[in-house]
Amino acid sequence: MYLRDTGGFTESGGAVALTLPRKPRLIDRATIRRGLEHAQSIDLVVDLGARIGSREWWRGLATCTALCASAIAAAPGFHPLLGPVAAPMGGTQAEEMRVSAIAPTAYGADTGKKVAPTALVERLADTPERPQISLTAALGSGDGFGRTLTRAGVGADEARQVTNLVADATRLGDIKSGTKLDITLGRRPNKDVARPLDHLAFRAKFELALEINRIDGRLQLKEIPIAVDDTPLRVTGRVGSSLLSAARAAGAPAKAIETYLRAMAQHVAIGAIKANDRFDLIIEHRRAATGETETGGLLLGGLEQGRKTLRLLKWTQDGREQWFDAAGTGELHGNMKMPVQGAHQTSSFGMRFHPILGYSRMHQGIDYGAPMGAPIVAATDGTVSFSGWHGGHGNYVQIRHAGNMGTGYAHMSRIIAHIGEHVRAGQLIGYVGSTGLSTGPHLHFEVFKDNKAINPAGVKFAQAAQLGGSELSRFKATLARLLAVHAS
Image 1: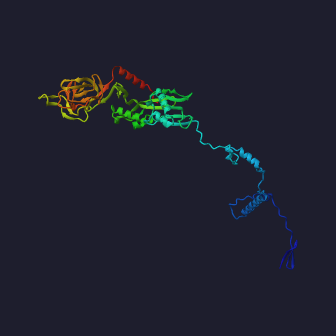
Image 2: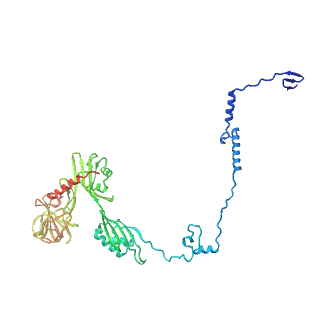
Image 3: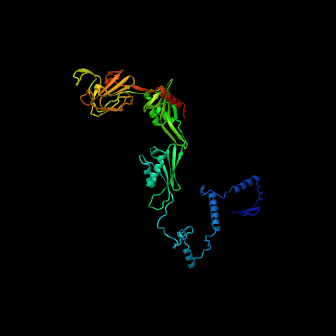
């Protein structure tokens, strides 16, 4: 059995069946629009790293292959482009070039071609000297100014001449070690002599710079004064947890703080300084017009503890620096010094049998056995009230001290101190001897209170200097001037 479509009839086996023609199918606009959108959504440039093996991937691979093949087919050829080449120089031209060659072109210069040198190029027998040499030298600790110059290459004669010029302007000892010397040496006539000094410049002092220049063949000195502001530096603040840390944070130098603590310890226990107390330091300070600064020592130290204020000013009295309070009272000095070093006590204070007089009597001092000529020093500060021969005491010196105290030194071989002279503790006043009623070289040492002899073994002086008169006026004026400085 079979079926065959013959246009309107269907033939099946031996029978024929009649079929009607199909109606045409109608397509609406929405279907057409969806078809167009599907056609437009076809992406020829496909990400070959995604959906590998899919129909879109194969389409993208085909597109990439086609594009690469098109680029290779359209690529130009790689053939060198030949330009004009200069003809090689002939024999005459080459010889002319060789004859006119000089050292730079002989070694290539900027042409890239090396030309053989000729007789016009001469090798120098010696390298020419630089017309000037500029250098810097530093003045070493303990070194001489002239030696520093000669080591830098200045001739010995010129170094002496420069040293004399500088000595006329300032003391050579005032030039600090480490000072930089800017030196310029000129051209010398031959290599057998030192280069001449053309210029020298350095900072001789904080307020003075010096220059030495060669003018018309002669060295001439030029002084350059530098303006300096000597206003002291004032540092104040609250003590807080640490006086040292607070003062350092406020800008005070460590050395000034150390001096401040030592001075304050004479009047206040350091442990008694509280967090709310305020410190006040006035320090030597100099500012040069060129910008440099120089900080010195402590001038005034202050401490405010509530209603109590302590101010200490550094003052020099009788050649000795010490700290005085606002009332003009200086530091306390305690224990007496041993009047003769290396001695041993041979006799104590009290009644004893006199070895020369042959009877017992009051011994008003202590005897110290010591070699002949051993130095005798003042036991503490004071003024010499007697100096000379004193009967059985022989050569004798008596010193008056504060608080109606006094000391005596007998049997000296030689006296150094003079009446009215102010002496300090440890200052030489004479030498051990055996003058007067003495059996051998020794020092008889006496101590007086209200002109009465007392046992030296039980005495420990405590005295303080007191300013008075015009000196006290100058002291108070200086104190007021420093207190007028504003804190930085």
